[in-house]
Image (tube, rainbow, N blue to C red; front, side, top):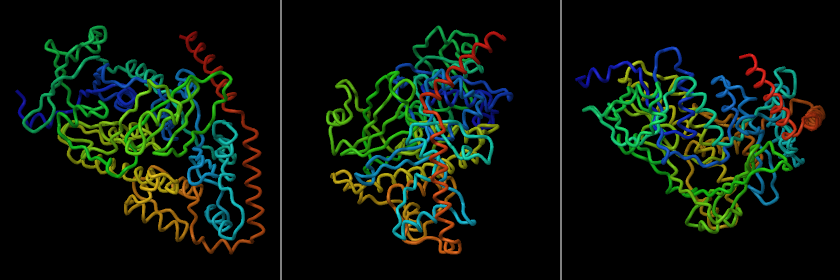
Length: 531
């Protein structure tokens, strides 16, 4: 029998992922890629009754595109096979006020003039009482408004090189695509119920007992090497992807959940998903708008459109929420517990996805947190189980990420808190973090964004969210007066015309996707014939 000290210093050679769905299979595909060549065996234990497999849309950021590149995924094939679409910007529709319609892109606006950041000129123009439409100075925003899309240019001198994009995913097709890649890369797939976790005297997980093992998958050569005759699976490290229930990190290891539900935002979400017709155009933006007791997101992939109403049950009922977005009577309201674990990595277990934390999704969706977490884990991957320093750094960085994303989402609520309902009026009185208060104070008084360690969103995106939603500074950089005012006006006019002309030259997203799908099919047939 291995004593406790020896167990802690055992080299990590076997990793068990508990939970499938989009979270589990993203983790599996990433581990198979990131740990290849160092002799690590990986199994994913998937309880079909607990895995969330319902179809919905997921909006992602440019980091998702970079993740796919790192994973070795051919984007053209992924888009063709999963029905994903491209995403250039977020449209705020009557968010800060009833007349507002603003498009916030992922990248910066305009160009530096005379070594002064572009937003300072726009702020100066606004404070001088001149008309300003900030999204006119972003190619991505102008293109998203027109429903157009093309990929960024590789030439730095091209205006199209300024484009930055994410994806809108059909989640069911997406995780099936990743599952196929992970299994082809050698990840064992077992469908079973993890019933009992055995811990040693120091609280490390030694093994898991499986019940109701699905024979067809469990008896494959790769999977059968994991399961003992008594249904026992022993690994060196465990990743909890079991969702909100946190079966491993919470129920077995007793790591507490720190709830933020008392700080108001939302308690439930209800979805209305419809197949997209061939006649419908596919937008290159997602839309956010306020509801009486929360907020609504509209998304479109190639296969479906979806409305998601995130609401607080103290201010409306599930029936009223369904009516608000035209959902069917059978549509179920899903409870949301906003918060995070006290620790994300504890002993020889790390929680990823909703088992680790659950935040709003106005800016960073669930998939972003999953991809970010697994990349962070791989970068800190320990040689042995006793690696408290790795866990401490992982937990520190993850908490920083959550802090800043929470602030970004809190700002969305504050910018819309002028809405005239009891829910929004109460939100206006919510206490903001000291980090966000400092950021808002600096921006209000000087037009600058305080940028912290671990930020997910760039200063340009923060500036865009603030200016686009009517949060204007009281001052601007006085150095803009060192530049000839007429020359500045001419440059602003040129920028606006360049953005509009370039956007008009881009194809509609529907036409672009059709061409991408056609060429992807040719590539797939060519690859099949060559094999």
